[in-house]
Amino acid sequence: MKEHILKEKAFVYELPRTQPNMAGYEFNDENGYWINQKNKKPCIKDPSFAAPRTKKHDIETGEDKKGE
Image (tube, rainbow, N blue to C red; front, side, top):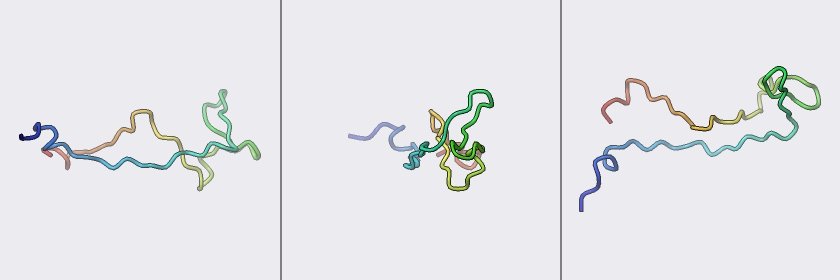
């Protein structure tokens, strides 16, 4: 039996498997961002920090993926 057209034509994306490590960070409600608990600097300044992903894991495809 032939597969449904969406199963035949759909492009499958590999999802990132890295989980953010929030140990040592706390969310600052007043400023609206995560900070390091030790030095109180924003976590975005730490090059080894893996930021949490969005809930929906949106993937931008752009014009080059049209028609797939």
